[in-house]
Length: 209
Image 1 (cartoon, rainbow, N blue to C red):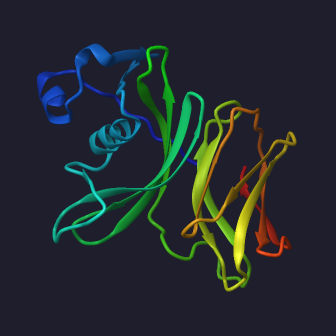
Image 2 (cartoon, rainbow, N blue to C red):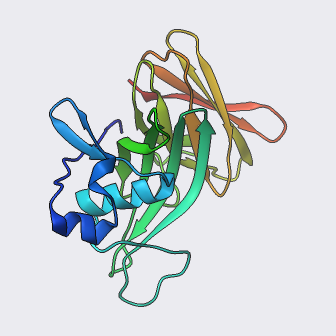
């Protein structure tokens, strides 16, 4: 899985009222308008709501019949953030997104891309190995990735990504999730190394490219 999604934002009165975003925070990137927000999480809510998930509410609890968007994990470096979020619709169906945002010169956050999948729980092929089911983008100089890790009883605690150009990024598995973010150059393909609690490499496979 390797995909990015972007959106066009209209600056009419209806959009401003619905999402609580000031038109003065609008900036132009190429031929597409992106509306920046000083709150990074609100920026993600606004963009996912507009693009794919109408009437989403950010919450840790879900009342019957509601659509919810939960923030499960994040990684931050200066001027960049990646968030792993989980959307659940009224029927209980779930989709996760790895969302990438960047900070502009005045301190506002802009949604720059995301990778999503409808698979939650135990990802990967039916093999008795550790497996990282990742989506991402931004290569070569805005790399981000995230997803679920299959454990298969191997006590997997760490995933290391090794890019073709030698860049290495690691993350600790938390609630089955890993996130990766770097300002280093990253070129494809990328291999995932899966490690257990003792530091043993239990499996290795290509994740992107």
